[in-house]
Image 1 (cartoon, protein in one colour):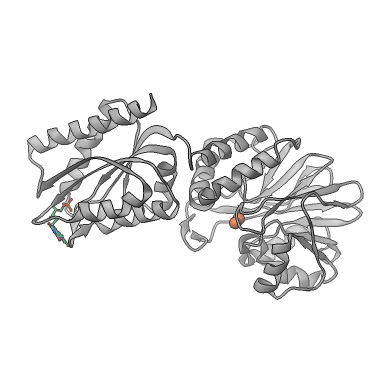
Image 2 (cartoon, helix red, strand yellow):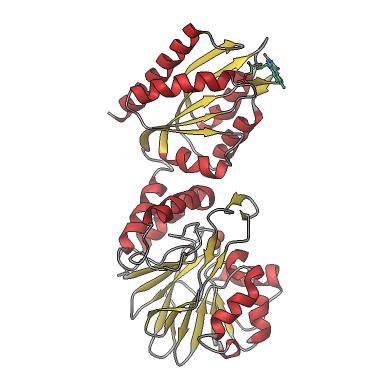
Length: 401
Ligand SMILES: Cc1cc2nc3c(=O)[nH]c(=O)nc-3n(C[C@H](O)[C@H](O)[C@H](O)COP(=O)(O)O)c2cc1C
Ligand SMILES: [Fe+2]
Ligand SMILES: [Fe+2]
């Protein structure tokens, strides 16, 4: 995609990545892709805000060259040192050795430890400005959105916030870069939630602090470093991020994430009965087979929903491992304070429940019910399973009231 002028002399010069399978080496993006958005201000002085992952070198340098000869760059602004944005720093340094790199104090240290760069680096303090001629940039230090060194860059004249990871999403850009040109906003909002739950969730307090800090700054365009640029309704993505950040400690949505796994179908039969019960009570339920669905996708639901119904058989004296792994990742993301219940089949002496409790108790999940059965479920047990699901769903709704 060629550069797009988002305001006079301010260009999107990002690249799409449709070949990386795992973002951060962990989160699947094979189907969705991701964009590394960078922005070039072509004024009396030229400045680029963030770069891209090193694997995209040629394409990214071409993007810059279409607007201005890369050797003529005056400033490279590093909002964030994660290599999806900083990976091309050494290349840019070779091609534009005179360009000054700007970042926070912690960025200065990381420039040395990640890339061995110590020269021509300028540390900016919160609120500092940079005059480019017709355009002025102001820097806001926003630690831990997403790393400790993170800052945001604000273009004062057109009120553009280059927010880096904040307000970003998975999903390569499909020609349209702006929210008002995009015909599938729902896709990007879903992918923003998955990105939030995978990447940003642990830093929710920092997100709220940053939103609060920038509360009095007039913003006409939110230009993140992944996903859509929001110019029609920048408040929309800010509100979504705020809502998701508040889920870290506050009330979540009255629905159920049902995570299950099954080796030979016994727990799966019961899962269908339990899901019937939940649905009968009119409560929304997202169902995931933990062995076939990457935790990345399950986290979107776990982050937002109040109830977690777990279906898992006993495996070698413990909890069926694919289900255990998803719960461990939920723990890593500090998904706390959920209502939960577990059902599952076992063959002789069981053991799944013990491991389940070991994992979820430290997360302050309230285990409200358990239903274990031996081997294949009987008709009576399936009826019981439906009631078990309905009872759980009713508790989810009651907790809201
Ligand atoms: C590899 C394997 C390991 C198992 N380990 C245990 C065990 O340690 N304790 C137990 O009570 N049952 C154990 N079982 C029995 C299963 O829990 C039982 O077959 C159950 O019905 C499986 O449910 P599913 O069809 O939903 O996978 C094991 C089964 C398999 C296949
Ligand atoms: Fe990041
Ligand atoms: Fe990023």
